[in-house]
Image (cartoon, rainbow, N blue to C red):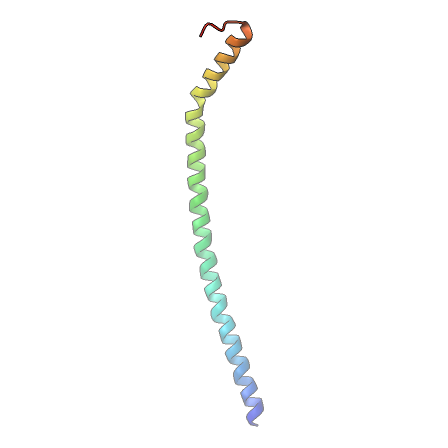
Length: 75
């Protein structure tokens, strides 16, 4: 009777360890998802700022290209 009880106790301990590890993995996944969401938000803000800042440069580039094609290279 000793051996079957030992096997049941060891199986219970194994399941308990797996449960603890599953909870730890779940908490880390939650933390990682918050970090990814924050990074995604920062990337979005940076992209919006880049679009805002790049607008005048694009317009100036288009003007220079048009002048160059027209043959006006006095600048």
